[in-house]
Image (cartoon, rainbow, N blue to C red; front, side, top):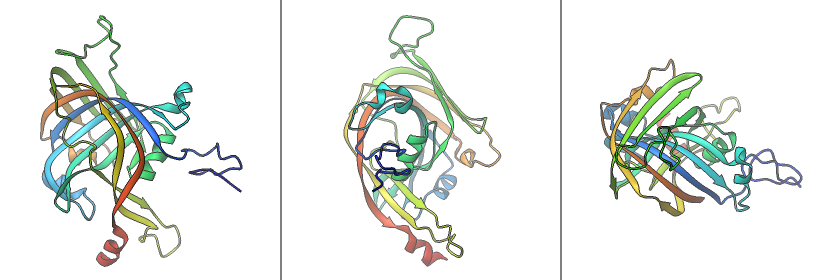
Length: 270
């Protein structure tokens, strides 16, 4: 009997790209709140969601991951990765949610875990300023005046540049954030005649547990989204930038909720 949570499934089941949940995460995040053109933002929302506001957020995160074995971080290449996430402010049946139109990651196992959850992950190279807690000109302070930068490059093209200067502690996370995030799980058909009728197309809400957040530092920020020949992220470039943030957080993922089967929606619109 073949075993494994994801492909490849093998006799012992240890070769699967992503192991069986729960999945445990901890990360350092740099985030920028900004406003985008509301018509452009609304155009990215799937059926079932409506635009709550034109407020968006770009997150740059350096993650470390572990399964229940708590062994992956002892082989860091299995555990560490960096990610850039774009979130839009949306509503589902009158309740505020976040929606992710774009997300880039640099590890295949993270890409697989994300696709299972409905995150639309692609490969990209994220770089983030690190802090080491020592008084050095090479080390930014996690406190007033601390300066941090982040970049994203996709297919060898620079796509995002961000800078944050910390000023004060705050009790509020950036908006939108990951609480009540809604994703689309989508898996297409290859059978002739069914290319427009996916095997899986559903709106889901993520369910995280054991969430912990460090002190949150806030300050001014700059964000630039650069042109790209085919990635449509520049449609969501900032019309205004409001604030930047730096914080650490941890969470565990092993569940989600199906909100809506979108296959019927698409059939009705065909």
